[in-house]
Length: 125
Image (tube, rainbow, N blue to C red; front, side, top):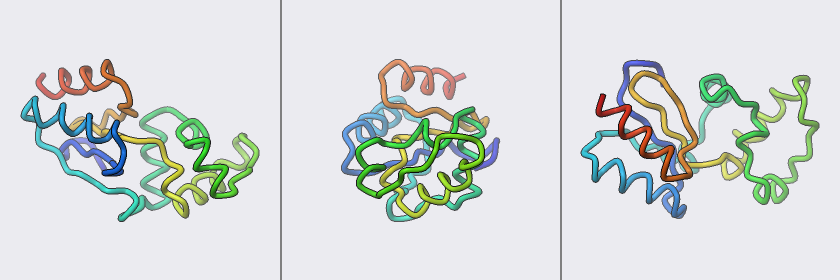
């Protein structure tokens, strides 16, 4: 997603944190595009872009249990960054959620109430 587009939220509908994030956005009247990333996994380029905006490495947003279940056991270093991205794209359950990209391109992993409040305040201007 590029800056200037609608707010986008990557969710897994079975995830309580994702449902909470959507409920907060709905309650605030904030329009968004929902991406069910298990049904429509990000491309390597999309995930790399999100990671750049988050200023994180792929292993920073990898869900530990799901990563183990997927058999992903890669070194956590720059030399293996692209391998991590490829593995996470192949196994999207390993990606932390929900990931929200604001209309200005700001991106967060919105798992806590404070981060959600920040997103809502940011979008309200």
